Length: 195
Image 1 (cartoon, rainbow, N blue to C red):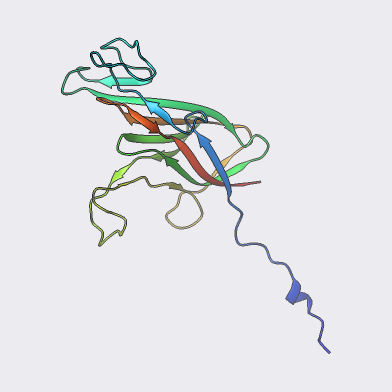
Image 2 (spheres, rainbow, N blue to C red; image 1 turned 30 degrees about the vertical axis):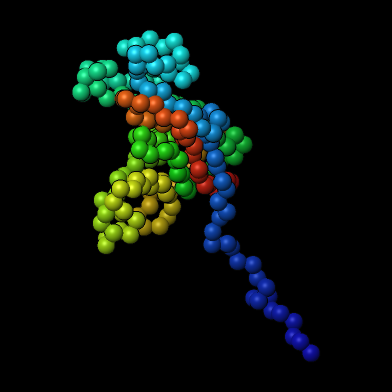
């Protein structure tokens, strides 16, 4: 006859982990992709979406420094922003945030708490140097956009707790000094736990 299992054999133990829910938001206002216009219209060449745009006037969302539009020191950046309220009914703890943008024009993606101005995550592309003996992912000619990671492990920042109804702001910047870019993206792929 088989013996009955003891209480210690069937006792429940607390999980050592939490489920990570997928959190997804598009800076491009749920369009999936968007077009970055060139900083300035060229003679006899209309800008897609802005066919009557005047010459020597920067396009919407574009900010320039230097002697623009024709100076050698002219540098222009196109930016878009998107605001939303995250986790309206329950607190959320961010564990991972990865911005998705297209190289080589992508300068940065930043995620802020829009109520405090706190920078939660800054994604800055890094050019590979080819030092694969120290880092197998450091391939020359490739661009890496490291994600933001939070947790209790050594080397990680503590995870970010966002109360219910936390307003967030995403800012995406692209270089557009001489030309625009079609099919650009600016989405946040995140993982979080809810309480």
